[in-house]
Image 1 (spheres, rainbow, N blue to C red):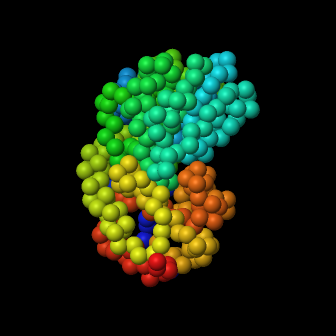
Image 2 (cartoon, helix red, strand yellow):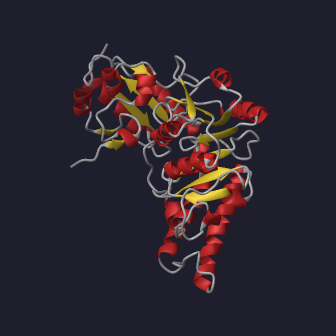
Length: 371
């Protein structure tokens, strides 16, 4: 069977050859446990982990001790939010209706525990406005959590302006940077949030590794317990090969960011040449290059996906893939259930070729009804 052309890089990316090369020795000859401190194999593994930690933390401009390795952004989000709020008296929290479920479900749980939560609504372009954040702040606001780049639409949040507001108000600011890394240059930015979550498999690394960066070593408390790894904040045997791979991903960033203008041209070309009736959910001039979300009015979602088997696109977040419920992000955009379901997310990469884009345009124009 001929494989469809892949346009779902926001869901996951293939492991880059350089990343694979870096991690392979730690499956075989350098297979030691980083927690084994009595012999060479453990020392070598621990040295690899700490070298990776130093490189990644340096990118964010924080000391190495302020980076914890996790299984991915979902765990990082939980550690950041629940770890920061642990043992605090319930007060007020701010997030938005368009966050990933890995954040929304945490806040829903916190509400049940007595925390007051304000969920911000996106504007007409699908973006969270800085002014709405400022207006939502109360005297008892403890934490704000907003993603840098929306995973379904690619729409940007002005995290730098929100960081400044939070610093002035002494409010902790957490951001999920999963779709921002490798697309936006965050290196040594002086206005990064207090806590930043990310995953490796969105930046050409393996699945099952991610990290949480925080700007103070005392910012979070553990909510899991075990062997004391990661300074007790994230117990469990450290997956050395995954950590090394994640570190190698950061070496790719200059080339990845350099590829963004080409990817933006591909995105523009799709919008210019797509004939079928559609609504663009990705904000003009306020979204990243690699994600394009389109909704198709008066087209049944099952019919839509039956018509396009030769392109690998998604309805939105991969966490919704097995659900027939409409995307909460599209609902927050004001779409009815039927329109929210009849939505595709096209996500691109430096691996995407212009011939792929030409095929995509011709294929959608031939398979879907025109205006």
